[in-house]
Image 1 (tube, helix red, strand yellow):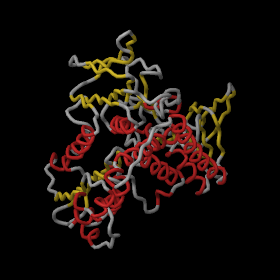
Image 2 (image 1 turned 45 degrees about the horizontal axis):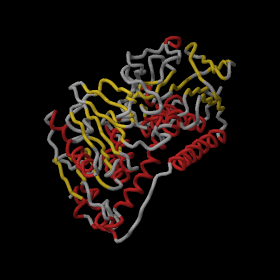
Image 3 (image 1 turned 60 degrees about the horizontal axis):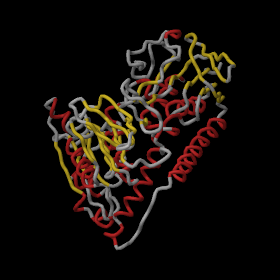
Length: 456
């Protein structure tokens, strides 16, 4: 009898698991309430990066004079919205066509568990029961909205209401200086908005390498972004009078930051309400995440959780890999040679200007535990391709074992950092040495040559 595999949530984890399980011979059903591809395609990664790409073209125009060109550009919000929708539709259709070609049963609606082996699909007032042998919950997350923020979708926005907003804000106040916050600050500054960034800590990107954060802060300041450091927002007020029409963000230290619009970028919460976790015997945390083991199994022996719901590492790439590993485990392939997911070796990127990417062990974390490491840093200022391209900002930093030479981690700040980090990610994942990279014959001129120099 074929394994009956149910997936609730068609994001990166869900559709990857469905495709992998179907390819391995399972009878797969997937339930999705919005579009296949999930929030990553519909709301988060893809549309934000599409908008950032547009902003990047504007930034390139700003640098055109230094390359002997004259150029001007303006933003068309309606055209930008059409472009985003086109990309989302294309990606979602690709996922749907793949799953349909594999015989996956695709159900539109909301799924909830009613027992360890049964779920109910609700759609347009009609309910359908689905029986399964194994299931994956991958329902994603939504923006966190604190009690003090009266989001109205007009002047006070969540990130999902800004892809793009109906009008480009004259003065946007971004609350939150993590990955999402700095990306939106970069994006709207590129679009021509005046931007104020409310930073609760003493520097942006508090979880990243301070040297990396310093490069981004320098870029922000040079582009006119206002940084309000050590300012923890605690209220947003909509003000409409003869003197001012906009919003005012009140901070815990008494500071007030005014602008035309406010954008909340202060994290997300998992979509676990209404999933029927208790009915299926699944334990959840007080934050709504589902604890999982190294195979992504929940406390129910046949039900997995992945992506933002599992609370491990909120990256689409990680969710997709979880989905593949889950499908393999459900189909019994864990009995063979099997590499478990190592979250400490996941590469991540921030699509600001310059781009930021890192992987593996961080310098500060190594020092915190007294681990001996070798740190080498090479600026792009001496890289031929960077000079040719007219953007030599940033650096490559490589962290390795001083005895064995094994690459333990690294950071890259600069143009195309999100692509370049792949070299270090492969090295970290596979235990390669710095000498292995040095002896690789790379293209000249290329930005990747800076990685070789940093490994020398």
